[in-house]
Image (cartoon, helix red, strand yellow):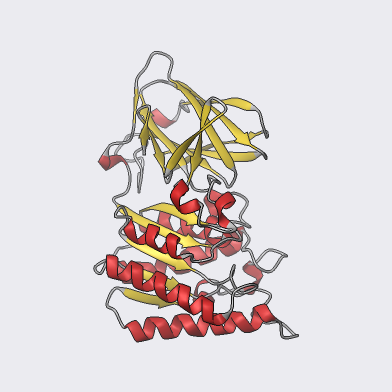
Length: 339
């Protein structure tokens, strides 16, 4: 989305908010069908504010709505700074060129995905509002086509896909893998609310701005959704996306190892998790489509100690490990070399 000559990446809607604009990852017509995901769909996790300017200094005015949150700033692929926004306060962050950035020969400054001219303000998972960009007499513009990756990856899933458990959302396994694949991620993860509603399936299938999609589904549904209902929703989601995009890779992920996977005493969640994984394997096998693949969660999170102490969300180490393993698997599927 382009607004005020700025790209709001992974943003489907800019909603008026107290004189500013709240960054929503899902449009209202989809959010109204998401229970309990409507609130989570307004979180800006994985959204970016992107612009290019010749100004040596720029200021961006933002606010964290309801609760505090952090934004991570990059200059292209290069980490620049982290800024914590206090809940309910309108704050201005200042972006300045590092004096050494321009001293390196451009041909020797490795730019694997993004142009070094591109400012990227990456939001962690909270409700974020944008107010103003000040470039102090210099102009600004959204990135050109050759200043960002051509490969677009649409990622649907739980809080794990969003990046929960990592020190920062930007360190999540999806973003770790994307770095290695030279991909640009459209992260549509929904913490605690990835429920595979038919309206969400239609929304994902109707998008035409992606080249690869991963579906990390099941873990949020196992506590409240029967195996029969899960199968109906998963079947509709997979069929809808594959039929709408028969030439694009659709990758289904089974549930990553967690406390229910190896539980001592049987629980509803543990039983359903096993059934859900079996359903996903069978659906993919029965559809037998050339663009549809299944990856086992155990092949992605290969070390149980990669989880945090809640034994559900990966740690920084876990996300890094998962990103490496997923990138390896996807590179074979889509036929790209890793960085």
